[in-house]
Image (cartoon, rainbow, N blue to C red; front, side, top):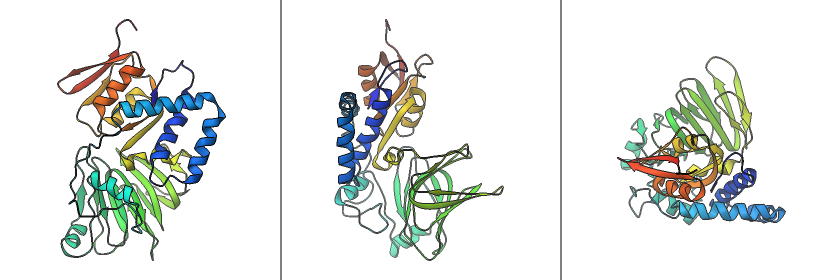
Length: 317
């Protein structure tokens, strides 16, 4: 992670380095990813410097800490892979993150058909549906599970990652204005304040619009709230699945707003610094460490009053 102002050089390299850091820390990082990363490093000395900067700042911001509460029993296995092939490191992380697996049968059967499920502030939860679909719910997300064995989920608000295995019929995610379906599905869906964002990691999705019309997305594509489709770096977008947030040339105001979804120590940038742009990889739930890192990287200082961290320009800057 690194933080820079608009007029400083290296913004592109710092953004790329932030994405590479998230990719290399992912459980599914492949040998090809590592070779591509090595090639990127060799392209320019600035790439090495940028990666050293983002790595140092990531550590400085408390990246090694696990701040997610353990809510699942130690001997309960919670996975986020529909075919139950998650490596040990993935299983350990999700258990540490407080994921909850819902199994068919017994108490799990009752939970699977309980209807509405809601996560609280800073909470994430993984739910297993009867057909083997895994749904990772982000902070302050509300969904309603299907009745019986219908391959469907209602997303009332928030963000989810859905990994639905191939089945007899497409899996469907409904919001107030959209019906999203695919067979299989590996995608993130965000529905907040009437705005829809869909990122397809693998496979293909069809998005039906209540007012009429449909949109088709394939792996690597993202539908933005304004209706545009782009092809961003998916490892950066899905880093939240692993408890990280990746910012690439993001305003300080937007970065703070996203970080505040996971930590009660609120980050409030002063108006004259809110437009500064940052690139970096940060740990969710580490706002105090984030503010400390900014003090080392930008002419800023944090003022903490009643749980609010106000980011202001340092004296003389």
